Length: 640
Image (cartoon, rainbow, N blue to C red; front, top):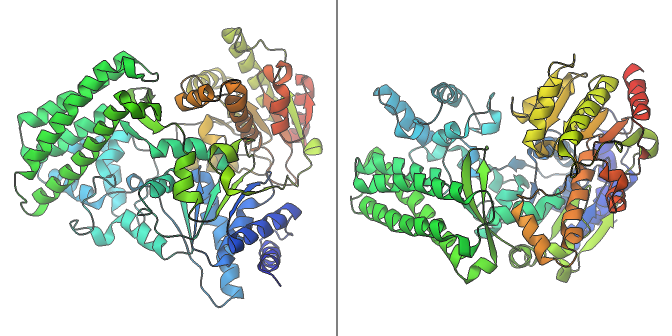
């Protein structure tokens, strides 16, 4: 009996042992065998496994049984939660009961996701002395107090375990980055450090779960974040290019300069060199606001370059002052080391940004400015193409499984996998979409490109009517925060069902309430377009307000489109839009008994010259442009 046969038998046993019983699906068995073969032989495998295939359990079981140290990287936290709470415990129970060996798994997140106990100690010390810690001056005092109380009891220090969503300024005051960290040899809290504990646990685990960004960083720094491993699974593989590209880059903000000045103030006191760095924080923000949210072209970067050149000089002066002041002891020594670590990291990014804005490497990297939380500008720098980086740091070093419900047609080429001859499989979906679902396109609306205001007014009326017909039970997905806000304003006083809105509570809490309250509606943006699993009657209507093509401010995608000319939009942006639409539609049917409507409030799905490419990316649903037909379908589901 071969290894793939053993995995298939084990899969049948695991599925049969589930609380609701059942049997492994054909596609799930085939996928488990394919992953088992790849894990045993080596090489790479790209798998498209439609919704309902059970792909997560298929690859987790095959990887676990292979005995290979495995890292699974996903784009969404929701999928990580599903693995850790459901799939991996099932795999562990099976392996422990059927073999003589133990099996363990762990979750690791980026350093800044965890509470820093050294920072907590400093804040408490300042409060005992009746002083305001300079590092929390811009944070909410109430939120800091809530975090301090939580710190007494938390076993994980993981921000996701908080019962509220703290403001960025609050969390930055109580956490630290890997660059700022004192290190295990110097930190008095190293033994109980939350991110170090997570990494120590992961080092001994058979399977470690991480996100795309952390795995990309691990590749970039030579494996020091996640450690040695023999196999990687990249789930939600359709997001790899975007998420890895940003992770391979870096960001500069005025806040980083002000933060460094705050650190320096606590070491050097009122020093002119400290204030000069703080002043540059405001100057950088002003330069970025003056430039506006856009790509930064070399010829337009004079003001930014001048500020960055000045930042380089002033940060170096600050570091010289800090290192020339001696080592010291205790808390002051720790503060000095954090200052030096942070300053060196920031200095390196400033120098690299200058190089990419004005030097020859500007051809290989893209720089752009965007807004964070609609308020603070960020200068981002990232490589234009990640294929060569992945070829050297990943594909040539270990076997990889790339899996998604929707694999873009050009994924293998764009990720630099072509020369490695990966296996490719498409296992479809076990669901009967033509009988279970209906795709409705609001074709009577004006195009959002021709008359945006008229389209928006009509789309809001359509949304309201469909929600009423469904009796709630709706996940409404929007391509912008502006559209989300308009929908909330339109619906809040018109519906008599619970209305849940992204941003008003932590995502996990929103999903739990949406699942529990059958008649509720959830309004959300792209954060909820994938990785969301709400089976059963709580979700019978998925609404997509607009075709999710890349927006003008997705500068990396626009650059890729330019480089793919001629026909760049068709080769790059259309596949991305089709993939996003398919991911949104995939939220509807999560098990064989689910039924419902996917409503797209954009007439271009029915009328455009590219409608066939969009429809081909979707499951084979029954289709209509008649709203009354969609409403009848929803009322039938509501009243049964």
